Length: 170
Image 1 (cartoon, rainbow, N blue to C red):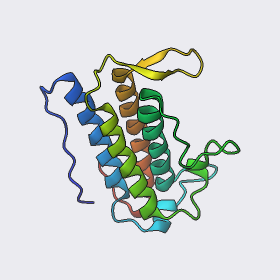
Image 2: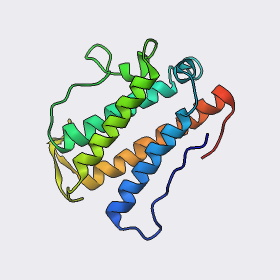
Image 3: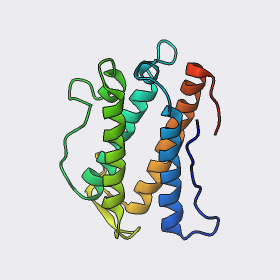
Image 4: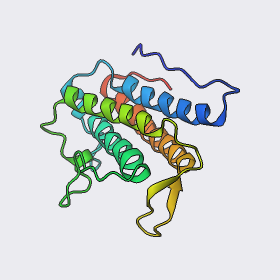
């Protein structure tokens, strides 16, 4: 695995720090998937878990779309993979998925998310609120949440990759 990842500067401003760490974690997920075949990306961890690297990429594409475009900007874009019958289809329904298409979709959602936050103040409130309370989120909260989302799932990705071919690294 040879992908280069750049950590944000030690003295970066808050916005550059948040977006920098989010990009770092996006690059980490790409790195964990680098060089694997479609079958390896679909490989499940251990029963009863259905977790796979491809499922993680699909899930995080859904998160990018949901948080940055639907919640922050107020768009009404459909789910990429989840359905009303299976809200976890991003994880569950990977058997026939083409890995290159999934990775390209995730990259496009990351790019759209970067565009969505460009020029938006960290204190700006989302157009859509919390499903339970209706309270809007600040962009700062959304960025912090997405860093947490990626960090958690990159831990899963690290274990999945090690199981697949023994590759490890932070």
